[in-house]
Image (tube, rainbow, N blue to C red; front, side):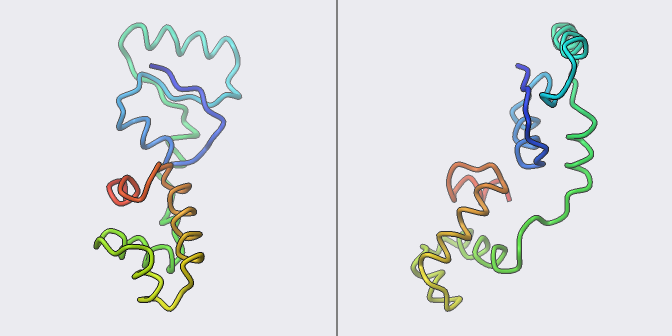
Length: 117
């Protein structure tokens, strides 16, 4: 499987690597280089865009302090309402933090976000 993406996000790339894709390259790649990628994958070799690898290797903790606290509370099994009470936040704010966390981790739900983090 080859993924051609426009996203230079470490979360997407990490999920692709964990899914054992044959290649993950940026959409801006030339047709010639894309053809080389296809041939490389057909030979059973892996190929990842250097830009994606650099993003993954240099990415720091993408979460704010509040997002980290919310994620840890979610990992402890607290529902959003209890997380809001614990940190003196509105339910909507917790929902916004969780939405941001899901986006940053390229996760589909909070269970997956906790697993990835």
